[in-house]
Image 1: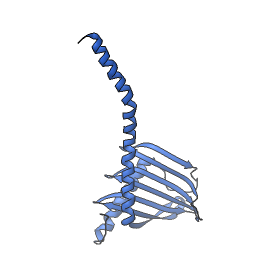
Image 2: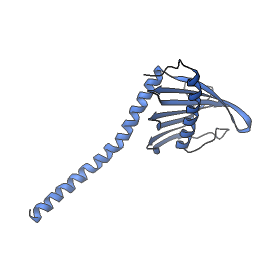
Image 3: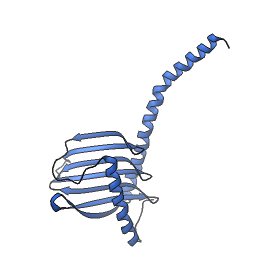
Image 4: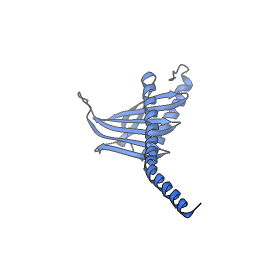
Length: 184
């Protein structure tokens, strides 16, 4: 091949790389979002059909009791979604975790003013999207209250702590309850 033909081939190759590079990058960024959307959609659908509930009594600062309500859904032996909510004074705290193969893919947290009126009065909220145990995207609104709260940690560590609590409690609950119904 002549030098001119080689330069022509490299020019076309470079042009093709430039034109497809951004599209490939965009497709890869959409891929993780689409995967999370599918996981969330499936978990929400299963949670509408089968959900288990339990309660944990805890204490916040100065020995103030808090009763946490936990809801979770299992599919094929694995938790696909779990939710924790509790009240501190007039603030309802809500945490929701979506899982794929026991790894968090989406986490939502909200502080809602109680009592509710016709519309929710969300004071603060955040949604984290995870990819390989790393926060990939983080969206937040409002200002977090500064009253008494449960201890705060980074989002992934909070998930690990909550997931450990869920698994410890599930072990106790499901061992004694032979009639637990799981989503199919």
